[in-house]
Amino acid sequence: MLTKMLMEIFQAIIEDPTIQRMLGNYDLNKNKDKDVEQMMDELGLNAEQRAKFREAYKDYQKNPNQSYEKYKYKYEPKSDSPFDKFDAYFNKFEDYAKETEEKYGKGTGDWRHREYAKYRNQSNESSSNSQKKSSFVSDEEKKHLQSLELKEGATFDEIKAAYKAQMKKYHPDKFSDPTQKKYAESLSQRINQAYDYFKKKFDQK
Image 1 (cartoon, rainbow, N blue to C red):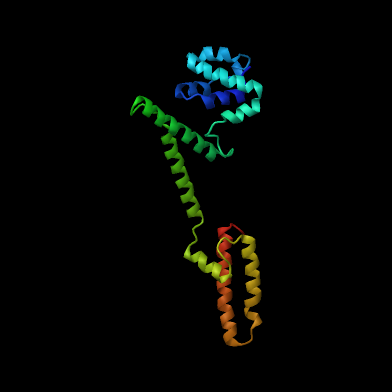
Image 2 (cartoon, rainbow, N blue to C red; image 1 turned 30 degrees about the vertical axis):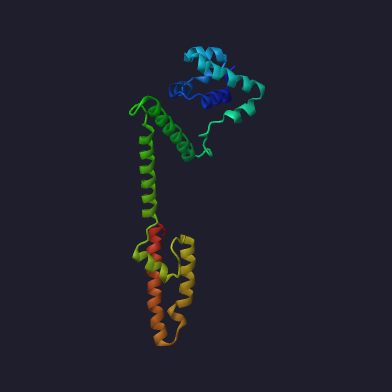
């Protein structure tokens, strides 16, 4: 009986790219009640390929888990992350294409996987640029952060708390000396402007 683990073992031992694709497209759910011989008939394998399949199947029957480790594909993804899977399959098809051209000559390799790599790189660049744009802090914002004595990336709750603390500290009514009072008024004005700026930015009323 065919199993997913057995199919992965077969994919690991066979080197023919055509057979690899056929195994990858083989409908296991539809054919799981068939045996290995029937599968090999359907794939049209030659005597040498059948011998490899039979040897792997014999090992599998003795100890499925141990045989899986023995034949585990060298391009197995490091994790379930889509990026790790992409890298594993890219390396797999890269080697296939190189081996094909070494055997059958230049131009025979299938390099379509590189187009997907370009798309991924473009997507990563777009994502990176988007993050850079979203994290960009204007000179005006830096000025308002400085007025509130805050660092870049502050949340609105932090901004609100800083605003209250600064107003409590520099409210003009706290000062009787004309010079100090005038300075406090100037600071309070800047603090209020900064708070108004961030209220608009964070859509707060």
